[in-house]
Length: 450
View 1 (tube, rainbow, N blue to C red):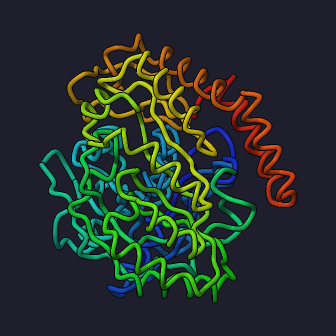
View 2 (cartoon, helix red, strand yellow):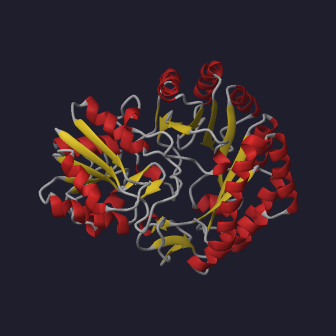
View 3 (cartoon, one colour):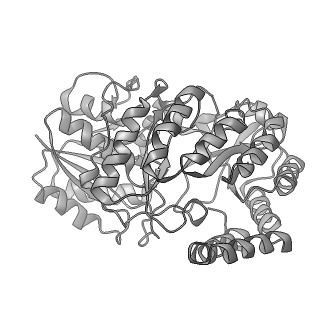
């Protein structure tokens, strides 16, 4: 059976700038389908000008007997104003083609998509690989076809590695603070997360599952051989959940001479682990801090002890690892004063970079301490009502606080001097990186946080 996988662009109005992330889940779905004997065609339309009719003709030209249209992928979410025209165009040229809105969706998100986009035959629920197989074979949970409840698909169909032969190196690039110029290839060492952060899409997963370090290192070697890859992003929702596995991974990666980065929590690392990671090529870590307000930590169910933030940032920097601190503005349980505490706290702790996100969480993720608010739409937002903290006046208030956070953190004379010193130390790597980053900071500090 021939199956066409289509990744619509995240912008319905024009080509997106280089997407931050590869279509990692779509490539995993492609690999899972191939393992089951399906013939796969693949089209990542994320970078080109939106042309739903051309994309639909491509599906027909591929001889597809079914189509998977990705409404979401790793750190990508396609808005309705892009999904709708692509589905309409498919129905115009192939009215009877089975079409699954693919991606990782919780049951609530799947029902919302099903109601908004009836042109699709079904919507995937849970893990995208297993959900795609359930849709195509009729075997197992994971495909919401009508109004009936749908159980999420689990991790039963996860392949050894994505279908890397379908990818296009050179088409993707992380934000400047996550890259020093080299093409960054993502690898997954684990799926899922045992923490219950209310805002996180990982909550739709059925379970946490880790790959053996040997298997992850083998995938790194494959990417090195196929594409000449030298820089990697361990795209786990949370690296180093299990310390022994993280140490083993670092030890086995060290002989390869690669650079890599990851995301983790400040309560999952220690000086010994960080030193081992740095020795194996780890040069950058994203710490999901979100807030230094304990009330916000409790309300969002993150369960992070804010007293671990300072020691982790200092230990990582002492090991020679750049630190990106990630925070959120508008959290339930937080307040404007709490946001100020977080921004000032991060300034005092001196991570290399900070990123501040407006809380844009679908209303069905409600927790105590927040309310549904109508958020002005843009090409990167969820559709419909959003959920923000009770203490904030509304979405415009959250945006102003986010803009102010960027200004306060980045437009300090001391911080600018620090980045200039980095440019002098590594001019070839840092100059272009700094100019790209400055453009983003100015946009987010003066325009609109994205």
